[in-house]
Amino acid sequence: MTADELDLNELHVDDELPLDEDVPQLVETSTKVPMTIVTGYLGSGKSTLLDYILKEQHGRRIAVIMNEFGDTSDIESKAISVQSDEALVEEWLELNNGCLCCSVRDTGLTAILNLMEKKGRFDQIVLETTGLADPAPIIQAFWNEPALNLDVSLDAVVSVVDAAGIEKQIQDPRPDGSYNEAQRQVATADVILLNKADLVTPADLERVEALLRTINSTALIHRTTRSAIDLSLLLDLNIYAAPSAPFRPETLAPFSQPDATDSCDGCATGKPHEHAPAAASSSSPHANDISSLTIPLPPSLPSVTGPTSALYALLSSLLWEGTLPGAPSSSSTPDAFDLLRTKGFVRTDDGREWVLQGVRDIFDFAQVPAEATAAARAGESESAGEGEGEKTVQPKVVLIGRGLADKEGVRARFVRALEEGVARERASLREQDEEESSGGEEDDEDEEMGE
Image (cartoon, rainbow, N blue to C red; front, side, top):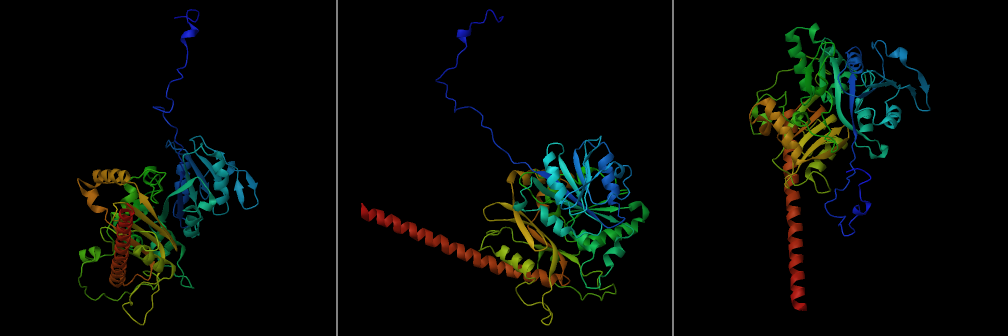
């Protein structure tokens, strides 16, 4: 039919058409850009990793914010310094592989604020910290901080370590007894790149990896040479369980690993058992004062938040006051808990599942969508073997820091305090239910009398 043959009278809108039916509604979604924080001691190979991200044709649009150019070759010469009120921020550079690059001389907040004005030109952010930086304040600045009002969600913290030098760095004491930089970086990491693996023997690699796991039993460790790695092992992991990002097997992987420092099934499960007296250690007093402890949780708990939550109260006491209920194994030694990192996986009586993340004295529970855990476990089962994924993700809390040397004693005190708190919480909930039930019966009686 040609335009001349078209009868305009045939074109009309039926006023009786129910416009509110069968019409798809536009749903506004709030998607945030995932951000990965990269830490690493001086000379670990961190700059080499960033250089790879910026130059390789990996098919990703990544905005890289660098605090140190290090040995990245031809990037520094392209940068044009721009002085701002808060920090020295370099001109943003758009590279031929779709990535963006800049350098800053602060924690990166200024650069992030400037970067978000370019949202849409990149899919994710990689933020580098200086080699001597404490990652904790940087993590806290971008994680669960609604006051910043940023369209950014913390994805994971990656630490690059030198396989040949990390042992000495971890054991290097500080005069004031504080954590050194290497300890902080390993303890707060979600992923550790054991770099320069080609420069040490296989036996050395095994020993170093075992040391790293005693400090951080939940970290995903990858051995690398010249920081070369598949970026899917570093990015889009959603370790902090952001609701705006999909879940992958790696999201729950930290809770699928046993505590590397546990020596028997009894320690891992919390069953009553005995140990032979431990031999005295001849190592530096600062070499093993930071460790990781896994504590199994009940199959389900009444709640994880709110004024009556036993788990919330216990974690608050531990992280804010550095104490646990019950007497220490040695009555003359007071509690001296100083935790850098807390992680956990929890189920509640209503069937929901939660991921616990804590950095220093800040912690939070993120609810895990049911379909997300099913998908994550399906992927985990494929990599671990038939049926393994479902069995390995069990409720637990992982503590990383100081004051955990008496693992059996700390675990027993935590479990006992939680059991007592949960019993009180369940009793309180039963009383509330009984009061509500009796109140409802009285209302029914009043209605009957009124009739």
